Image (cartoon, rainbow over all chains, first blue to last red):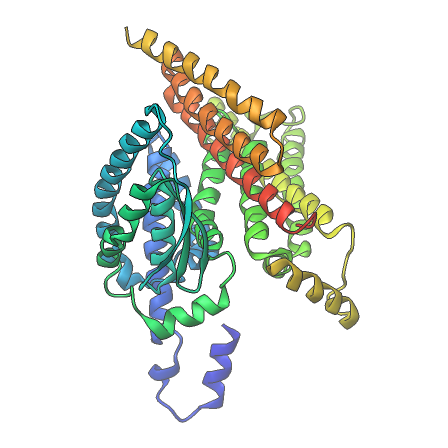
Length: 366
Length: 89
């Protein structure tokens, strides 16, 4: 946001529409990403939630808006929104073929296991791939691993190192059949050189882990919010949902390193969220006390809400769960940060302390 | 009929956990143990869903098994990273 406004100020004579943030190409792309992420997350929410009444669906819409606002950029790094419309149906069409291949190689492995003489001939084969797009590479690597008999060990530049259990498994891979299928799925972007090269350079290490975690994070967060919101129907509630939300941030630390995550999700934010959660919890409790009930006596909230005692109790519990969820999430992340840093609290303003952090983080990257 | 099938399947999976447990306890290297724990986690997941069918509360048990899968994923990843970085996250 800041950058855009400065660009606007440095070129005052160009037409407003050219630099106005609403009309810029990048802004339109961002909005499309937001909308697409919202649709995907909301479909996931509907799949999880068995309650389709107005109240729960509106909670779902709110949660999905929140998560798509905070985490939608996780979903679209290797592909744009345009390409997603094309690729998603093709990816779903690719799955039956993949399952068929998995079944075939499963049968082959069963034969190997039950054959009286051992015909195992394990080997590690390098496999040169023509794919360059990060997401295509990750899909390919995971397809290889999912097929029994072959496991992707490492991905370097555009060479896979694959462990194959015998010559048939190796030959099946070397025919390039699977690669051609994946190339078809990612056709418009599979070979985009410049774009993917910079991306590969940016995250050459652990591309597979990073991509998978980046794609998972928004869905894990939606799941955490679902557990919080449905605490009074199914197992879970504030504590469990808070821990799941914290787990998504811990996963980001594991993939992208402590330093990068802490610049996004700062310690200041954790402390603020922690006290906000406690404030919501204590505030609702004290409100009940002020209205003449006991501490956390939700029925008294009906004076404000005017929906009847049982609904007021339900809403009160939901509010408490949200408070607990926020507090637990922030506390878990804070504890994890403290353990991971070993108790060091580098000050942001102190340059020498920043150097120490940078050294640590360069170690983290590998 | 179906219940017996689910019960038998989950008992069989429980039996299959034992060899993995042997590898997890005896396993000469850390990698052996990590892979064994991962395999046990995957079996536990399936057993949880089958238990859901037995108790006729599938929706609830699927929620639990999703969380279990997530925990399994995180623990494997964290252990892998911990040993790769030689004791530093």
